[in-house]
Image (spheres, rainbow, N blue to C red):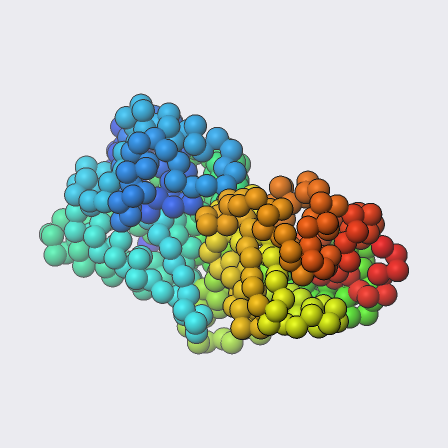
Length: 454
């Protein structure tokens, strides 16, 4: 779609407001994406209004405090600075959108048990902003959505709202976020973005807008390409993780060591086998491949994407089966065994528990073992002393490679256990380190034929 001359003039006016930083911004959803985005634009001199339905989160933010735990370099300091300056304020009310020129939508877009997208939050946000937003405002969907979602879900809601209010239509774009916990600010500034606009003119304005915080490439394109690009990049990673995980299972079954095989394979040009792990969690990787597949609208049935998802989804179950096998090999009654799990977040040094592999592991073990203890330095209510947690345990399972776990006194860990069985789902220590500490070492991707090499 090409904008008419009147629309072009209004978009040029918006560009001018972006340049002189008089454009007022709103960010709907102040989670892992929306909060750092809002803070970053506020730090560049824009007035930013944040909207979130969680009153406690809003109060925390307006007090200048960071509600996101875990290691997020620079975020707490930046948030305190922009709140103090008055450039950023949060609330639960949509009425302030009457004064905003640009609205960013950063709400969750999960999938259900059948892998279909659940857009309740997205529809609700679009309905509410459509009721109050300034006529002709630029609405940018930063949430990751299935290809075609803006056209079939967002556009109808916003078009109907503009017609009901008899106002100038909203301009619409999609610029999917590219951040991960632990690197929120650095990802925002250093990673390229795809700016998809309903017209080339809208895309150009989006590029000008994001150039205020992004130091990497900004590519202008159409909305469907932006939607496809984001879901494809996460599906690509998921498929590659699945290969690494399946290779680890093969190495384990055949008596090899995945880490050594990976090292040697990656010596070949163009090969980059990823690290295997005890599970794939988070908000994005478990669902975005399904969003990509959903975008086919039944015209094509993907094969590789579902297969990769199946491999990655089974990893916590594999860890549970491995743990139960070790318990039985030691002659311990399952219903009398005590298992300690190290890590509950889905990612190292983060408090993000969305789609936690540890939760999936616990669901399998809960009906089989006597007691399950959990430790995580970033997640309440698991922030206890790790040595007290493992005291008297029959088996320790490492599910998350938190920095704290890599520097544990493993000899002390071994001495604290009732049975010194150590199951490493993230390969945080080597077999020789475990042996020196007095631990019986077992690990994902570490075959039994290698136990003699410990």
